[in-house]
Length: 292
Image: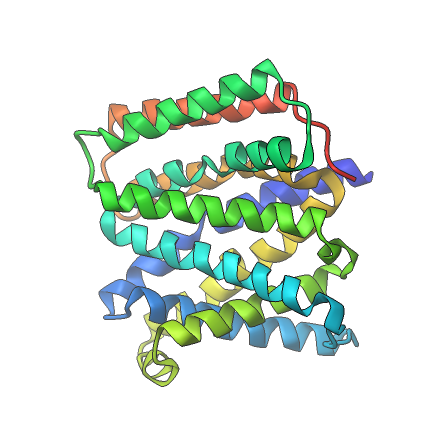
């Protein structure tokens, strides 16, 4: 398998894994976890998992000082995206939140065009307009739970995730191994979530089988595996293409919301999803040239 197809495969896997977030987050809320406690536990066990894997395979945990600040910034944006996304699950149906989150490919494309002089195309402009229209349809939805505050915070989640994707590609972080990048993203993300909550209180809530299952599986699939496959995808096909293949993410979350949590699949949700996916297809047809 050549590097391009390997990147595409990992981009699709990253999106599918990240789309599993609500499957493991909502049950924790029912058990009394706050948003901050749920995210902290995910990052805490994610760090332990990644450290164990690296030590088992003889990988160094050392981070050269020249990468420290950039890694702190990356961890800040990634955990900030997680915190705002998890909060949005309390403000709206997860299917709507996941669909709105999917504007991040458009934001990535915009950042690369404005900040790194990627050539903007008619397809890119059309995709941005389609995505904005899709978000507008979802925001005005008459069916399903949605709030203006929820729309705002999920857009913040989308923006911080887009910035993370771009930073990993264009900064010196691209010199790090995939394992090191994933591990320290989790480490510094954990630091931020620890500041936002009481770590002892968060861990003390793990008293049930459901709680342990959701935290462990949530740390493994949409946290560790998602970050690792994202790092691989960005390295091989760039941030824009990686974001584009995030089409699997809202699809996964919408299906989880409808099938498992009994959320209503409304006409407006369907239209919004189609518009945003259409926006991404337009980018796929004529993507900006990746920054090397």
